[in-house]
Image 1 (cartoon, rainbow, N blue to C red):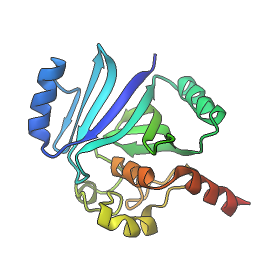
Image 2: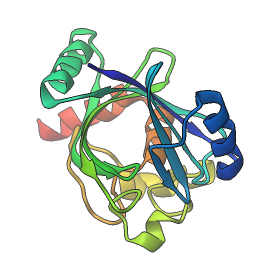
Image 3: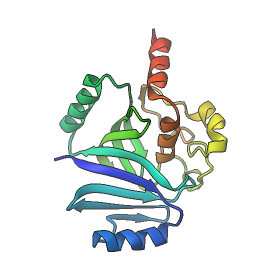
Length: 192
């Protein structure tokens, strides 16, 4: 059974963890210095927060699949809707290794459909010092979007694992700020 995923950027992680612990009546399933996640059954949701330099507010929404078949079904739904998708296989983000498809809804909100394959010891594939730095290449602040483009331009079938371009949740904000359709279209043209 699929689970709704919500990821929120917060200003102060410890304060936010205390608030959500009280709201959900549960402790986080994952708690790191810059990230917390609750896997709740009532309501059935994967709710994550992070403090990594992004503005406070909604980072992205998603649907967590329990297996590869459910993920393939979600990808078929995205394709049937005529939405361009950014596919990442075996990528590390949010302390987990996953296969995923990113899509942008008509209002520009980034949606992630994904199947978690395993846990990961770091936030992304970047070395620990870079992964912890919200100003690192793949954590684009508004002022760093142009620099991030040079390093972290996603591809339609990205399987990148380099330290600089490892997918990270902040990359989602980069995707949300750009038109996924344009990214995928550009990739299709470059392959032709």
